[in-house]
Length: 117
Image 1: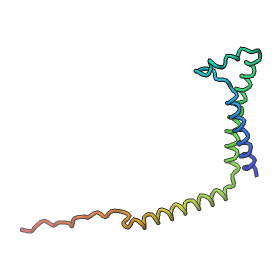
Image 2: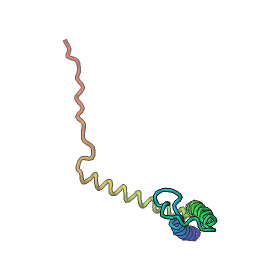
Image 3: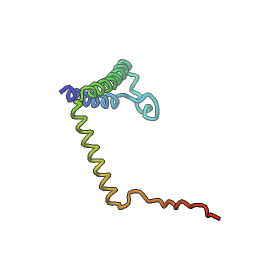
């Protein structure tokens, strides 16, 4: 339950972070020349708020992701990992069986004994 709640909050914070980044005006570069309207009274406070909001959303995503990882059901994770490894092993066995020889054989020369004189 906590895991699902954390994932939903991460999704909401991600959307808000995307919107906050898109709303911000560029500080430099070619696109900054087109945004000359930053001279309006109150814009400085808005950019400060957007910057703080962006950092807050990024931090919230980080913390919620860590919390969701801790809140995961360990039994389900173990079952999922075991099933995944079983599927991978079966696929590898099928691939090797389909190829014929899995490992090329190396011919080892017979041991030679020195000729007796």
